[in-house]
Image 1: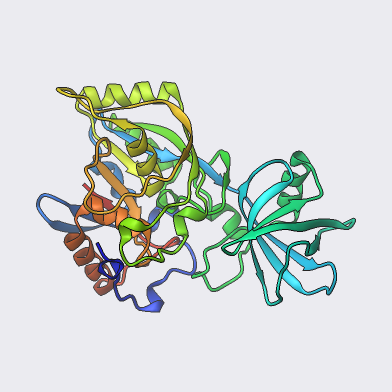
Image 2: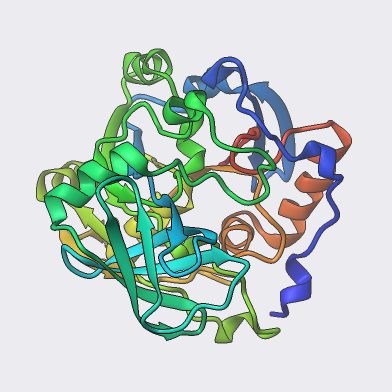
Length: 347
């Protein structure tokens, strides 16, 4: 498939710059794959679509303050470091936003008491940066000096409200540099309504990293290589999810990240229901049409940027023609798009 097949037109005023006043106050577009039908609902109605014995699976990653304002030690020029991946207590892969040229050996200062960081290597725009603090101290420094890493299409600076609203209510495993945004709509009340229906809620972890939003730079999408991201799925969760599938329950994945973890760990079982396995490590599973989903039955997701791996996964799950028909409908009905926008349920 060609990259141009995943493009669409979106008026810029439909890109949400702020979250809804209430988390569960966003709109919900429901797409029924078999009937090729579209329903317009409110997100707080999501529990109506789960039945007793079904399971909602969420990604419990927590966004860290990955944006670090710094200055060049030699010139005092302002810059910003975005942490991409931790290699050890001092060494990180990073992006650097600056108007000046950066060479290996360039030093940055930040915070108090002369804290500094040094560029040790560079490859394809990604810098290897060493910080002069140990791991525990650096986590504390990020909490003090770091900023919430809002996406670039949100044309404003992060404020105090983003500290809460750019996290899911169930976030507990620090490590992401972007939120698993499909989960931002959930409140504890909505989760309780789902449980009251006789469905269960389980968690996996995938630390959303650079791979999730790295642009696709090749025309033949099959040639795109997704950057690996760390995931974890616990043995007790695996056991419960496999039991649910064996009994005929449906798996509702909250977000493309949750979907990728489950599909990466899914195994075909001849003559029986498919299963997943317990593991932790790194996955670069890239899902695009056509793809045979092995474990996920329903997908809750936001409206994604054109030509991204996220919209490709949604197209694989929904069917490309039906998905982009739904996007056209969303534009017509003035849905709000992207991270702080409205939600979609594909069943």
